[in-house]
Image (tube, rainbow, N blue to C red; front, side, top):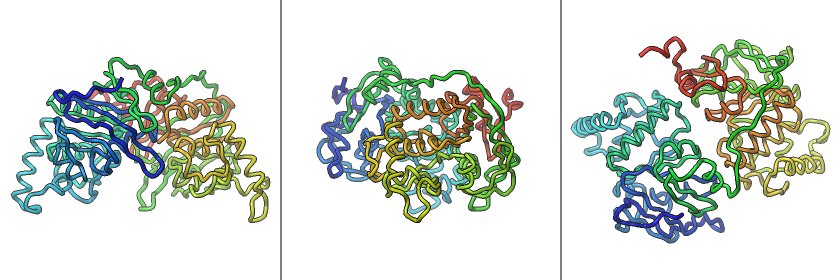
Length: 513
């Protein structure tokens, strides 16, 4: 199923690309052809080699062997400047913008003529106004970048690539920070670019986006490109099976919930971040036993600060948190002892100590409990016992409790955190971004575990920027915008309804033109 190399139809060809980092083979004999005027999707699990391949194309890495051809001519790409010179642009997952620069300054930075002379600015402004109108990329060129919503910042990145005359545009996980309506707008832009004869390479883990937006799809697994085919000939299930190497259940199989009494009750919570900015604004809600309450919203609207406050990792400005009608102190150890477990959004920064072995991470946050010992030295045998149980029950690979945690894949690291928090029998589980950076196979496993916990009559609060995940797992959905709860919806609510709430558009405004 590999794509055939045909210079007459291809704007870009990668042939025989190999790249290793020490003993780790990142790309193995990869052949990729991208047609003129097409949207070409690339999918694969974490570590499949997608990012390395694109980094080679954009000049961040050099291939050990292999060739790159643009318009049928072999070219060298030693750095990103050379990539841009060959008409290749890239919109990174984490934007490469100077936050305190204006939009105009960001776009012409590195491509300015005359070092920001007025004539250079006038020329750039006219060209950008033309591009913005042609490709529906309207943005205020004088706005300070850090004040713009993330969806508009992404438009700035695309404009920057087009201003540099990119004919081949690479987008790495472009919808991770967008509302559904912003994502729809992005794909309209990409189709316009395709229809104008430009070529787009789309890297995404969202199979629905691949099916809806691309003309051709390539699948990578363990460094190899194992299949390329017209997207119309594939299904989400067949793509997932190619990515993982086995059949994967893409839907969440669950029975209706049977909510019990209110277990977790939040009243009038206000939280300020380290800058003193109020990120959570008078938030009140409850979670019952035997239900999953999902909080939907675009990243940066207060969900992170809400979870940190509920876990006891920061002290709120005001408000009350009750567990079984009793107020609990804002201290992470006391909250855990009371029965509030926490799977944090950032497992590296908060959930794990990566230099510690799995054995020690298996008790992190619970290590003050008597079973682990009362002296400064914890009982190694007890730590080992817990770790081995987690390895067995959660299929953690490799099955080595002594292995440094940094050496496990993202999916297995997440399983370590999940096992630790679930297996200490909490009354409430706070889960932030449960499948961020996690492979499809591990996503299936994590989703199943969360449903099992719900069915054991536990209360679960789920925060995720993945709207499909929120809708699949939740029994009720709360939507956060600008630090406040702006609405509640059923999991059966339309994507449009949820997307409008996520964009801060109230129900009474939804019918207005």
